[in-house]
Length: 253
Ligand code: BGC
Image 1: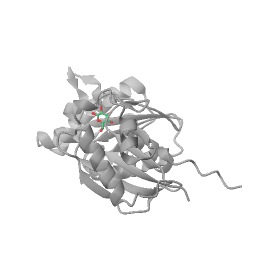
Image 2 (image 1 turned 120 degrees about the vertical axis):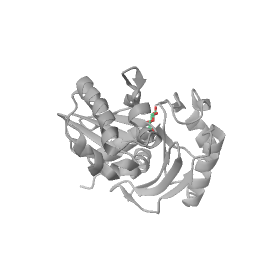
Image 3 (image 1 turned 180 degrees about the vertical axis):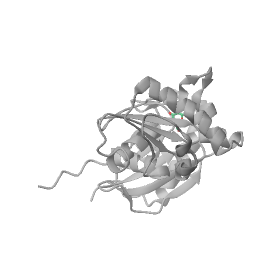
Image 4 (image 1 turned 45 degrees about the horizontal axis):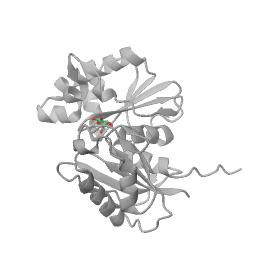
């Protein structure tokens, strides 16, 4: 059995678990620590070290995957939408590796979720273009074409009516403005219609914690593209980060 630790860093919480990367099942409880306020690099790195400790991460032969809410290019964090601006341009992967004393696989959070859904969830075996969006503090996105992830799509930041889409349509916008499901769905309608016009995808997958309430808002949308909830909801980041870190088990013959 191949296993790896998956860590998902978000604007409000940092979650982790040990994952069976052959099946996508959790092998431990999911542990969640609050994201230190301000989201500063040194504080988040310290929390990740603590989390891995709590997950019994002493065995350094177990690979670690970490996903983060920013553009990740060659191990550097190139943006910071819902964490401290100090992350921008930082050699973050190296800093985590130094603090943890081991190598990690470092990836954007929505890309990790997209990879998890491709391997173990709603995008498994789907041909053509799948767009996964996570509706949380921000809007994360992953593009998957014929099962291959195209990293760092930042479709939460497309501009609609002169505004950053995630500032209007993320789940945090619903909470901030106390929008009813119906009023929030009207914003989602605008958002997904724009994505549909730009990409003509074959499938939309909606992830993030709120996707557990998908029955409240997905039926209110009218799109030409099928739209389904993520299978792994809020665990997809953990699963994808772990799966990307683990070497694939060779198929048995
Ligand atoms: C960031 C993305 C991230 C998403 C979800 C956005 O604000 O720009 O990189 O994937 O939030 O956390």
